[in-house]
Image (tube, rainbow, N blue to C red; front, side, top):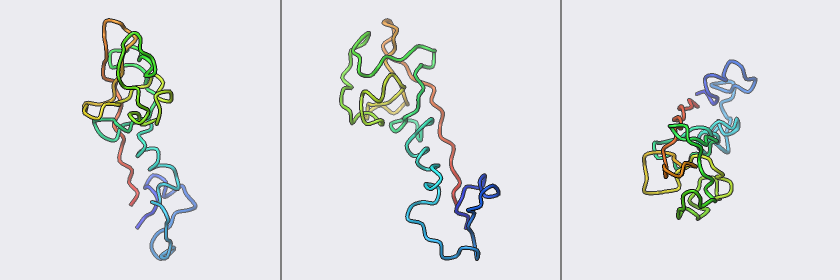
Length: 135
């Protein structure tokens, strides 16, 4: 069994497998030591599923190129997403004007209120995370 992703196996001096390290025990999943799972599971830079509820990347414009309104702002569009726990970042302030999905009933992806007073909100083009092969 390989403990590192295949793309690191030939480049890492810490490649353990088979008889070389049969008694290695990990306190966490092996990929966490490399920060790979943390980046993916936390949705940094990509979304884990179509809802994008855990996405914490820095895309701040919509599919049509409109700039996102800061989540802490109430202009040009007022909204009720003021609760810090609604955001994967843990706060409205840290969500800045990044694309997010603070609505637990919305499953179509990350979105934002726009700075265009004639367009209330739009979806954002957030890529899906690629699977990490850690076995």
